[in-house]
Length: 408
Ligand code: NIG
Ligand code: FE
Image 1: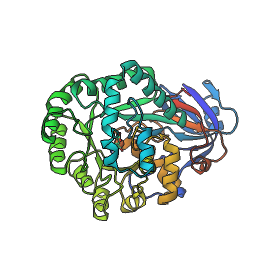
Image 2 (image 1 turned 30 degrees about the horizontal axis):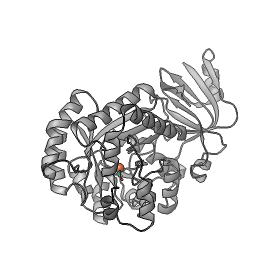
Image 3 (image 1 turned 90 degrees about the vertical axis):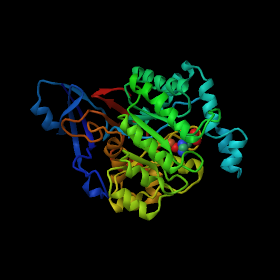
Image 4 (image 1 turned 180 degrees about the horizontal axis):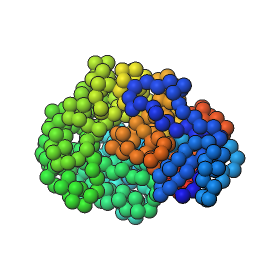
């Protein structure tokens, strides 16, 4: 058991509701606070001096200077296991080329598939760990990571096994997701339905057997998988015992409705979601995950986070870090920018990167700083928590704690 502090401010996010809009007055801020950690969990949280007098015999980890604390951030949507890069796609898009022209000239998801298939396991693991290190340095303690650049049994398993290996080498909490349904690979001989069936019969049983992922994702879009075949696939993956999540309404509306109908944990993207479907999402327990990094990478509009929150949806914010549409990877910068354009309160942004994102991943023991939760938190060297979003990602995290241990 140990007492960590004092902290100028601790923003606990305790007591905030899971869904809907939030005002900053609802934020619980403990001034001159401390955290008592026992066995990786928060035993007590409150005023540092009071905690100190109540716990006279325990070790104190003293914090120098003024620091503020948030729960560790959760990035609930990334594709950070990949080979190669797509800087040329980015340059061509900015020079006015269309998605199709880029794909035809050797870019797009398929090019990342080829680079990932050709990369050695050592190289993939090394670059994955580097990206995890970057996210941790931002204060992110839990990271969802998708497969989806392998697209056959051998390479999808290769990706998921590398994510599992990475978990052995980092204290960050990794949540793997099987995205074999990212795209029908060019070398698959058969229809979309046949490929989805191949995932169900050849890939997912092995994923399950080896315990490589408990979540399955699909990209429903004109250029990827169509609504009806996707719905059928998702219901079958659910029968196999997987949690499901969907890349929905990125360019074409309609698929968030499917995500809700099949009981997906989250529907991510939603840049093109129509008002009627915003209402539908808001009535459900499916988390609406905004991915501002994709909007910034592609020059597309932002997810209508304001409308979703006003309608009562559970809104998370994630980076979508991937080599194509979202190469930046800085969730804090992206969330700050989303807040400016969508008019989100600080409380809404913080909730979207913590307990609401954790809910999308099915994790209930993180995301808020209160007794019983894991002691995962991030500190910033500043005297006011508002400075973090105000600096739009340029204020670096000072320390990162996971399960009560300082790892950064
Ligand atoms: O979330 N939309 C589909 N998948 C990714 C992009 C992946 C890629 O371009 O490599 C996304 O934006
Ligand atoms: Fe994505």
